[in-house]
Image 1 (cartoon, rainbow over the protein chains, first blue to last red):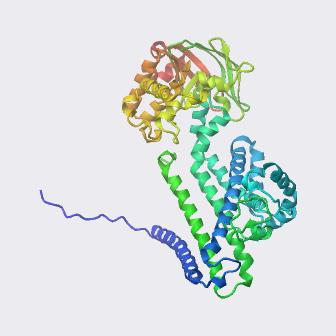
Image 2: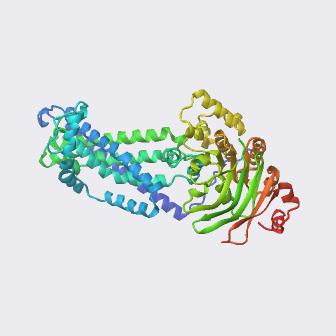
Image 3: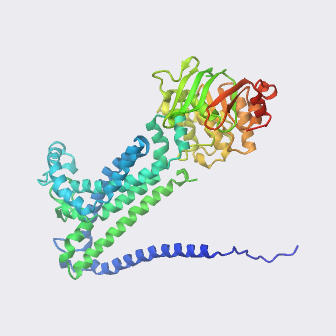
Length: 313
Length: 259
């Protein structure tokens, strides 16, 4: 037998295909380029902050890490609290819309939720100061009186109600629409086949949701939560308006002393910053960037570890 | 285990549309009964009324009665959830839960009934159900793997294992082989033959050869035209239906003149 020269068969290139694939390539590269540009800008501008003179830092901090530490803590603390409040409610609303409500009501409710997403964060900030804080203050007093022995609820209670807990509630309301909207879409996509399989086994409605809808939607719920968390981590206005910040790590939720968040700290201090001060603020921004990145990578890792059971195959 | 089904003058509706009209039929225990008929004649709709899965569709309802060993499924105060635990169902397309392992799929129905199960009990029940579905030898080494990784025929037998794990009185099969290849179909048909000794089995099929191979009794459904309700035309021993039916439409259908 003679060996046949291996010739690779080329598929015919159609102009439409080429234009389309180039367009997607450009779009894909563009997002990478923008991300790289932001990352490089942050890195370069941050460098001076890491070697800054101790005198450049306000307050009693002497180096960058002790400056940014409480801010990172405050950012994550407020965002996680918001997530804990928002996710169960969002899942509840999404399930109601997708599986319980009559169709017409579900549609109206869906629009209403989307409308909530369109409210600017300044308005949420004003609402936090003007309505929410005075409203919840008496509850805070009670919480501190009754559950003061539990560290996060320890006193002295804030007289204004403008605490990190109030911030977390405002953030929860802000991230609720995005999480709800995505969860609703995911839940609606549960294959009817699997819902019927559960019902035919004698599952009640709730058992069917636990057997078929929630496990199927889990990757989507995690993705939705991460989007919400991203927004909560980066939220500036609402936090800056509601919170009266201090520069420490404070676990107490209801006192007038509260850790600030990175974004809000930048917004509050940027107008007066100059020289290395600007670099320090940008370096805190870099830290926020890093935190968000880590959180997203963790979420991806969680989703990927359950890939075989995702229902995608 | 095995129970008698008696249907008296059943009308099945989708909202105001009458889909199946006036069905009366008696299905004896430990038999295989096949429902045949052209597309849209209401045989799938009718089989879903036997475990109250029909009413899952919004607006769907039923008039008449379905008695299982004398108890009316549609009587006042009857919980459809409990009905479905007695009357298992296997669907047209294999539908194991993709988020569960093979073992969890088998135990899914059992876990609804009693939450606490010891590990050994769970393993025993899994093996029993999978052996009952002729699947044990193929999956015993990968019980913790996802059920969606199996072939179509294996997935369908996994669904049968899931249905028989709760030890129902009746098993309904809605075209269980229509998405499967001939070899897998043969495996399911053999399985139906074996299961007959323990369960009352009702099977909807498009395939007349299949009906003649697996069933003892055959019911022929037909519609007069689109928009008209489906009706039970003839119900008799399978051999009679296929060799010497008493209604002309049945003979036309089984001899391949329409459908």
